[in-house]
Image (tube, rainbow, N blue to C red; front, side):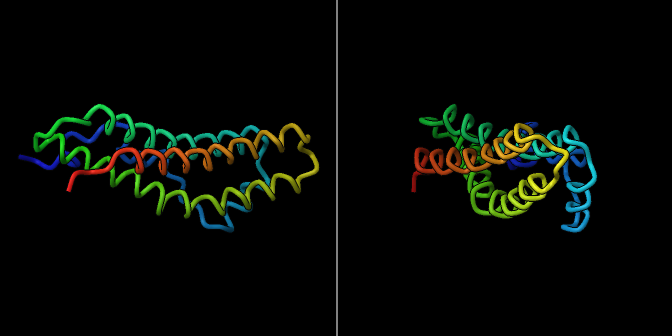
Length: 145
């Protein structure tokens, strides 16, 4: 039987090259210093939304597969667990500092209103909430030995 990660991988877990942001820290700083509020807000929402979807999708899979013991279900649970662990241990820790620096850069721009600055900070707070969601899902869904 084929590995579920190869044939049955759901859309929310498939990498989309159009959505992957490949910027160096210098390019990110220039982006934050020169782009409009809407551009910055859209970028933050896009990237953080991608992480949120990976977490909620894996959590939903875990919930739907609980109690099933066939091989495919077991492999899906393992794959979903790996997705949650990856988000929690790799993706969020790697991205959060950059987003927090982004909030600082946005706050330094005088042309943005306080409301706009708070809006960007609230988007980054969603990433912290997603981290808690991943931690909760990992604690809730443990794989049988």
